[in-house]
Image (cartoon, rainbow, N blue to C red; front, top):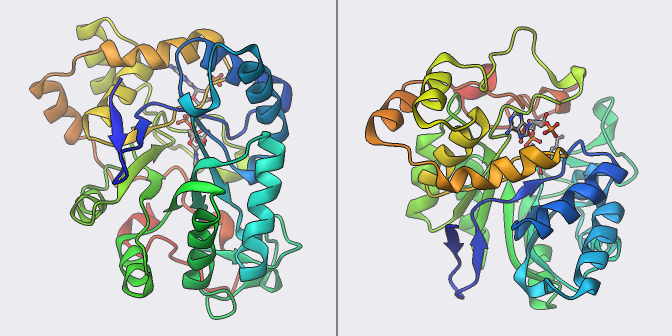
Length: 320
Ligand code: NDP
Ligand code: 1BO
């Protein structure tokens, strides 16, 4: 499998298992199955509410002895209610405890949005901290401190626009090593990819299959299906692959990492086997034409009347 190489030589396997929306019992089974069937990259987050179950899976697999901790790339993310300087390391330590780990391979600021410490998900304007109250650079400096303390090997961000990356990099002593963002044929984000490549920031593609199992409150009416797209279906037929495999392989060919979520054993296996699909020039050209700047995760769930996050992404894609 392809890997993404970091400056210190560390390599992140390009395909990982996503864990958002996976219940505790199913995620434990899924992570164990994935690791025992070739996955070496798991994407987690405190806000997914299942890191303790993922941790049980890690502990059982590593204790069996066939797979060592250092062979697996483990990412987690700082939730939006722990952006204040004093809260970053305690939030990371809670994640490490839940995941039963001594260190993470990668820790990301989940969103460029800050909530008050006791707020899990905001319901009104009072639930937020402004960027003046919790400046991203202060949060970022604590991420760097976590790296210095050996709690994480690499640090990065998620859901950052090129503009937000640029602003952060102007002040930062070290640049983010990763930006994890929504990427798929309907949201190709070529300019952001170019910006990241120019600045040597790796990119991970989330929701690569269209995130079909999001809660209803996060879904737009009549949103387009990626898995059912006629062009994708045509390519599926041509290569005798599945739609999931074509979409995952497409991400891999763009040099990003990709983290499809599944708790279904045959789809977990099928998704990793996408490495064997060979998309040719004409497939890539047809997929390039599918871009419609469409976001499944509009970020609208963070917008309450009057707060300052109306355009999290700083671009036209917000209106999709
Ligand atoms: P995905 O695009 O990975 O889609 C997941 C859905 O696709 C599930 O319903 C899953 O069902 C189904 N599925 C999986 N494999 C196949 C397949 N081969 N064929 C058909 N259907 C399939 O959605 P996510 O939004 O979960 O994104 C992936 C991961 O990215 C997340 O789990 C999370 O780790 C990360 N993420 C990060 C975000 C961030 O803000 N940084 C935001 C969103 C996601 P089933 O489980 O039944 O197989
Ligand atoms: C609010 C959604 C987070 C998924 O990573």
